[in-house]
Length: 353
Image (cartoon, one colour):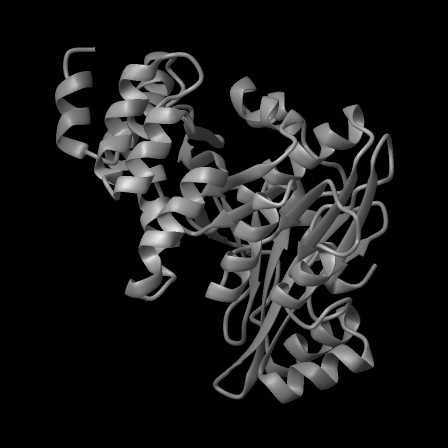
């Protein structure tokens, strides 16, 4: 077993989400959101990070890394797990950030994904966005929805990812996975091509630019279910972020377009559990109904929270989801307050509990 295999196996056994390898310190792993030193390993030297990089990357990938100064990819170690790697240069030496993905797609139940979210798999068209900070599990939630489609529907699903994380096997659906940089030059090129490839569902790993966003809206308008992610917290922030992608003279038209195609926004974050042994996901769910579509068209996104609070049923605000986790004893009062969108209101609402 190579040293990187051993490091990653130890990280998996510790329940880590990420491993960081950089010169001057031993490897560190992120466990329950906190960085922990892997004390059994010595301080990393420049030649060590180069050797680890060379164990993972082939010659073509190393050449691209030298040209760019950073490189994203995914890789698997048989019988251990699947990983996402970002390697980059710092102070002239090689550093590696490795995300532990896993070989199997976790079930919705194990992730705590609400049933109202998983039911979105059956939508035939429209835009579904999963939002949240880095490392909050957005890609895993999307993978679970795609897996539900694959298990239940005879669809053609095209995923566009940078890099590919979870591997899907053909089941009832055809799942074609394209990696940006390997199978296509960019998200927007791959997305435009996907419209000519007879898809039912298109999963876009991340909305990064105005061209990708614009093409995704067109895809959702023309009878496809489009799944994607944004790095924002909260449904209102996600809507504003989409509109702000575009210049002012286009924003009115984009509001109308988004109001017509949006099906749901799921915002999520991971919160440390009360027992200190893990993290639990809190999910905000906004589903598009006539009131939501009207608010988006009129640019009154600050009213979306009120719609979620009063609608009942399938919708829930982030703070109500957090308060529910607290009432179930899954998180502490401090964690609930720190994670809330409105800390003062959360403090007042749970103060006597």
